[in-house]
Amino acid sequence: MITLIKNVECYCPAYIGIKDILIANDSIYKIVEPNSWIPCSEFISILDCNGLIAMPGIIDGHVHITGGGGEDGFSSRITEIDVKDIFLAGVTTVVGLLGADSQTRSLKNLLAKAKSLEIEGLTTFIYSGSYAAPIITFTEDITSDMVLIDKVIGAGEIAIADHRSSYPDLKDILSIATKAHIGGLISGKAGLIHFHVGDGKSGLDLVNQLIANTDLPIDQFLPTHTNRNKNLFEQAIQFTKNGGNVDLTSGEQIGISVPDAVQKLLDEGVALHRVTISSDANGSSPNGEAGKIQTLADDIKQCLVEKKILPEIIFPLVTENVAKRIRQYPKKGTIKEGSDADILIMDKDFNLRNLFSNGKLVVSDGKVI
Ligand code: ZN
Image (cartoon, rainbow, N blue to C red):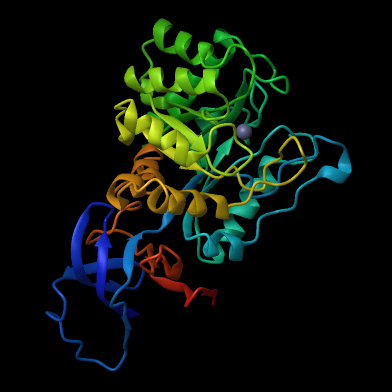
């Protein structure tokens, strides 16, 4: 299957101008100057994208693909995510996870859902564990999970500074982190410890203790929801200045919106390659309303339109940076020869027009195929 995307303005996410992109099967075969490659077969499908913009497919690193919730009784359970909603948000890769509920939701179910989404055309990974520490695993050991189960990239989301957490101490987290680290070394995976950080007083204290008291690499730790309140956000800024990576959560329910948070990070001179944004989609929220994956694309659009942040500055936070965090770069998170053909095509107002996921056109003219 060969597709030629013509005359598209390319953010890879670095800006490279107007190009033609040739997709062969599931990957990007060539990126050439417009009209320098003449299709010589009727079997090549051609998509003229004159006046349109291309960026890598969005990678959402925090999605409750099996549904979160249930924190306000059984009637508050949130449903599984639909692949159509994922594609309509311009997302081509997700990392799925459990949340507070590891009683009625299981890792096996999470893995099965991740596999089903992949059959539908998405790329998926998962974390072993839930809010609680010690963590739940497939094999009773996070190292084995990472070595034996392809989709497991680390442990998460482990809750800290939250009334729903198990209030883990340094020793609890260390036993998970050391095992995930070894699992990462053996399997060539990220070995991430993904922290859900709540509104609790201690904020990032535990993560800072881990860095100060061990020799584990700082980029093994990825705290999220770090824009949920002012104190935590200040701590997160300091964490990036110390060489750590942080994740922001999109949507209106978070304390400091993504556009405001990114503007503040720019004002503070934070190295944005340390920052990612995820949606927390289908997770629970205090008012019982599920987070929506569309908020990620909406917040990016607001950064572009209202804050006037340049595309090449904001796009990496949902593409290249995430791919690097989950150790999938440059296979994912970029438009490059040899990379997977995950390509999001927008109009000049940043509305989704077409989406390729692993070389397959899954959204055409704004509609899921
Ligand atoms: Zn969370």
